[in-house]
Image 1: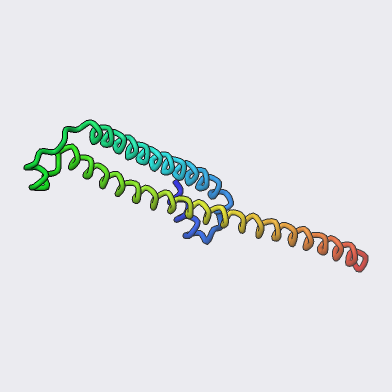
Image 2: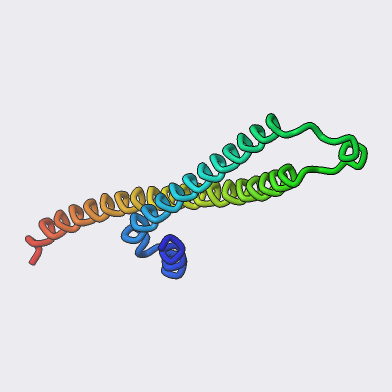
Length: 144
């Protein structure tokens, strides 16, 4: 919805933006909230996985001499390292998406503010023009 509104506003030179931007802003707000929640969920998942690994590390058996010499890494530690790398990659991706949605929302809010400002200026000019037209009509009505 947000993308559709932006494309339509660009194609119509923002002629209908005052009517469509509130819908786009709502959609962008929902998207930003969902992205922030997804980011928080991944952070929680990484924290949970790290705690589980720390518990395992604290209770694991001591490495055998052969494992120490060969540098063998336990399967659990390998799985943790893979999970941590995957989750950190997801966190970076979600952070970028969240930042993009925030910037997109700010741009829409700024455009709506500009449109409202220009709209109120145009209304004032129209009101002044109507007053001048009424004055002109009253002054010229006696000439007929």
